[in-house]
Length: 318
Length: 293
Image 1 (cartoon, chains in turn yellow, cyan):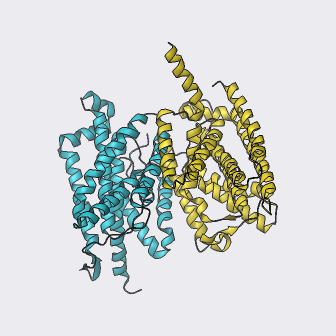
Image 2 (cartoon, rainbow over the protein chains, first blue to last red):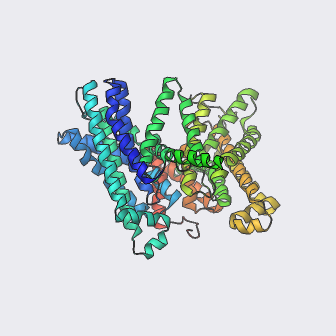
Image 3 (cartoon, rainbow over the protein chains, first blue to last red):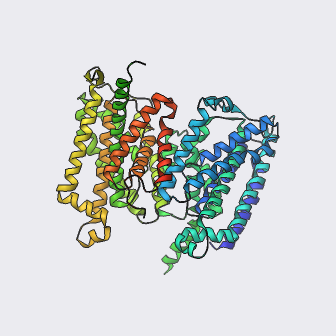
């Protein structure tokens, strides 16, 4: 797929996203699925943003959860409307991102994966520890203000469009960063750090920046989810929450803007589709198998599928 | 608390026992890493499968669970070889992140397949020596822990002899030192990959049996945390260093159990990662590691 076609694809998706609720109507179940899907699109895109510098994280739940806690607490302390608290509360995730980024910038691959994974566990331990459970509510968690108090189909519809706007904003921000000089620096660091350094690029600075941005928007996604659900518990730091954006991004296609979007939509459809068949463990088995097959046979993700089919067809013609 | 020393000794033995499980996992990971330069984050699933294989054979045969090492190790070697062949070989050399990602797929696949086969209830086996304790320096130690520590030492000696004295072991070490060089010497490196993965999985299976006989509960989801800790251990000890893995395993086992005793059980998992982060800040190549790539 040429870049232009891909851009049109994104615009097309946006139009569909705008129209979908009209088809779905005011069905609360489907609207909730769509809202969570949008939140996870933001989260996966934020996770994917980190891979542009050649870094990968196994502990993004730390940022997702910290954004959630930060926002829930700020909303209740300052009695701010949740839509404002989301962007301030995510600052907690950004701070943590800066801290963990500073530890990680010189580490690579597995080391980085391990430190980020461990960090999510340390944060969870701190949140439920005796010292902090006065603020965080320990394992019981705390209540968070609803995005749209009252609930019901209409409110969910407003929520959906609001989160859609935020999601589009986030992806546009990523796009602007990536097409700027910073994006070029990311690519240079990813491809060859030594040469990048020789060209006067400071890898530490750019890696930290990528960590900061990725953590902040993961925090935004976490805060949105928490305010959508109306509560937060330490389970938000769980391993599953760290792994979902990875699964989404890989199945869609790493290091592309549309990859996480496509991946989240495709996997959500598979996931919720399987639920209607009543599979509990079977769902996880299928998702695991799907992930392995995609990594081996479609390393560039689902978005490369049209290319692959065309290639295959051309080969057969000859 | 009465008499500080015997408590220290008691906690120390718990730590050593926990360390044994970690060492078996970590050495397997290290072996695989050495030969293939691949990290298998799903290594803990081999531990879990080892536990359930032991459980199943125990339920069928009623043998002394220690004897069931002869079942869990070969079965896990077979599973390990299969997984290497089907999942890791196709992606060898396509980037290090891919290995991590494929492990995540494997984690989901294996855990939930186990949950389908054995259900996700908590399981437990009672060892026949459960109530026997041996008095050492006035401290009563469970016999099981001593047997587990001795079994681990025997396995390690066996592995050492295999790697040092046999032709196959030497070929494996050659592959891990220099893959191209080994290939030029006529060593079938892909066969070495398969064997090292198999041995690694077998060691994890042995760890699973030892986990079960110590009377700890197990579920299909038990594997992830020990695996990640085993990985922390090989980073702390230095990638590819077997003595490092042993020292790292003992450090982590002891630190965890003393942490439970002093600052509370909730810190059991976090403490390992705190140690990891501190080690990486001050010595990014690990305690015994020579140099980063």
